[in-house]
Image (cartoon, rainbow, N blue to C red; front, top):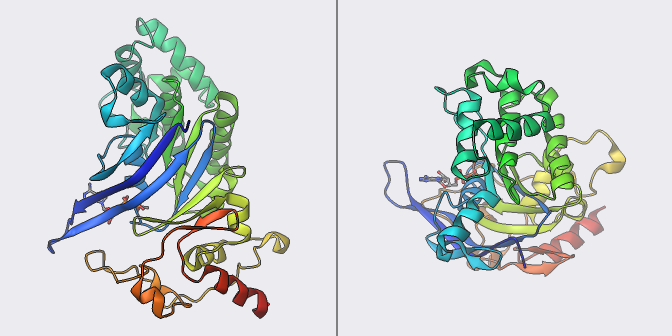
Length: 334
Ligand SMILES: Nc1ncnc2c1ncn2[C@@H]1O[C@H](COP(=O)(O)OP(=O)(O)OP(=O)(O)O)[C@@H](O)[C@H]1O
């Protein structure tokens, strides 16, 4: 049974601007996360990646559809089961500063959940647990970091603290939302390696949310990728296969935009894909048919009329009317 499953999950928000309307941030989302799996979620800003993470962590409640934890709807769990789920699914947020209380030392912030969830009987036991995980995430010696306030630490140190906090409650899944985007480039690889190590050592599943395909490929080297566009899942596959043979034109454009020093490793599709437009459509007035067609260089009449459904192709799934046809065009062009 899957650790987490989303069944036709939808969520819409009232628009934030002056214009009235609602934004569909997740549309008929179906996905499964297995124990120990790493899933990278990619797509450009505003496509719904964070919303997806927050729905999985029950920070947002779906407007329609359900989230299952080991086959059970999270909103129908008993109190005890729900507590177990809340500990099992931890979210690490992009902005490490906002995620920590600025008026409390790190130890004051991190001891509390351990006591509240009865993972430690008293402060000393909680500190022992934190020492263990601070060492694990490379914050040595732990006592120095535990007595600091968030503003006294660097972005990289705060992200490690958030990972240690998530780890300390022994989760089954960590939803990591752009965990390295606000960290110095030189520290990114060490944080990614840390997550990969946690995945191997503790069999923790990861959902790694990013708009950066390079880091997604790095962390989910043996995992899956899912590509989102305007709240929709448009492609998913094993990550290596997906990058070698991207099916959806939008994903082809993302792959084409990744710099690759070694020409042998470049996907054969990784060439400039000229989109018709660089802008996302108006969220309050989405186009008919395929939501990508106003930007797609390969659209035909059917793309303007019918929204493509997800279907099986090349070991994965894709929502594009013309994927096979398009892939053939590329083959004959080369
Ligand atoms: N609490 C909210 N209230 C209203 N609209 C929201 C809310 N949260 C998200 N949205 C809207 O839902 C859509 C998806 O947002 P989301 O933050 O999930 O995208 P994202 O892909 O994570 O973007 P980014 O990469 O910039 O973080 C956006 O149009 C956003 O404005």
